[in-house]
Amino acid sequence: MADDDHLPPQIRLVNFVSEEQLEEARRSRGSRIDDGTAQRDRSLYEILKENKDRKDAEFNERFKHRPPKALDEDETEFLDKLEMSRREYERQVADEEALQLQRFQAAVAAQCDVHELKETPSAPKVQTIRMK
Image (cartoon, rainbow, N blue to C red):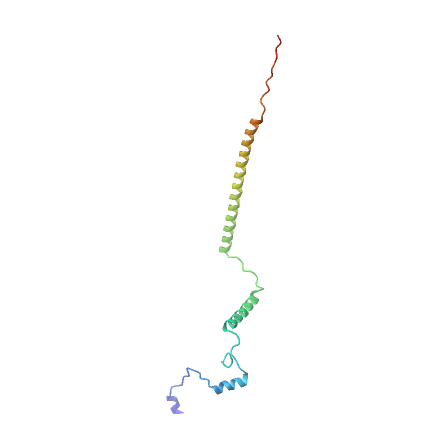
């Protein structure tokens, strides 16, 4: 035992597994993909996609019943500015429509005045016959 104190402790960097140990593991617990005793029947893509879908479903289930997050100051400011710009745009559209309508009505009124002048009959000339 005194000799063991002077020897450096052995460090195992690689855990070597012999065929006998693999066979024993297969007999005791069956073939498993994790330890290399069984081959995969599906592609790695399918396995990773299934794992991702399962994790996403668990995440969604945890946060499904959570109330929506309240808006912070920056978000409310952004929404206010968006609403103001929408109202300004609608006001400009309404003003432009009103101006075009006013111009149209003025043009129609000008045409009506011209037609009225042409259609107004001239005063009939009264001819008087004088008898001599």
